Length: 321
Ligand code: 1GP
Image 1 (cartoon, rainbow, N blue to C red):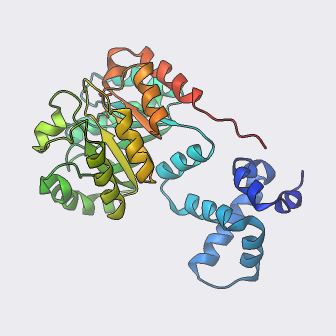
Image 2: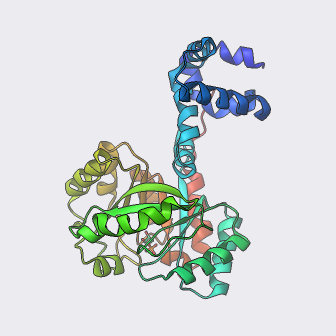
């Protein structure tokens, strides 16, 4: 099938065929094409070629490419997997573990094609974080994102940072205070910044985040409050939502709360805290989580990484053309 054949397909087919575009166009052709569209849009010049592209590719397709181009790697990967009917999985590595433990978990992340590694903890110091990232990189070749517990957790060796605002709480330090201290340092780094609405949900016990931030979590049986908070986060310009029951939570986020947020807030949804078996991972994905995060579960039983990676893969929808 030639590229012209592709161009003549109907718009509805085009949307479904996004995953195949890369097959139709060789990388050599595709990359300059993307570059051309972006350059034309940046210079805001009307261009005959752009009109042709709009007509043939449809706005959906062009927008998708433009989003890919401008959007962070993290979000574009989640959106891309979502479009392909797939789910994502991140493993949270606590930098305070032994070096060998960090190396072992990173190795398993690589072996099981874990989409992202998050690194962070409530009390981690900059030196420990830096050492952990160095060790993770020895065995894991995917993207590493800092999941910061404080404003000192910034390190250029990572690929990016979840720029969190603890929207479930009412402590201004964790809503904006720590962010303004960190912002200039992050701006001077090469880190990809992911503006994240962070909602702490009651997971059945007091967590480090709740204690250290001096904030109360949203009650687990109040999906409406979680939904309204997430919606406010979206309106404030956040790019994704993180529902977290907190590290080591006894109860993961209830499916009802996940689905309530998914129905109302059309943003990538990260769910973590207390996910430590196939059942809880399946429940979170089924309820609509795009990305789930496992931390303690993987530390306690390394086989969990492989098991939950298999759950993630089982959610891959095959798109028929
Ligand atoms: C915590 O969501 C993460 O912020 C992971 O939690 O350690 O309970 O898996 P667990």
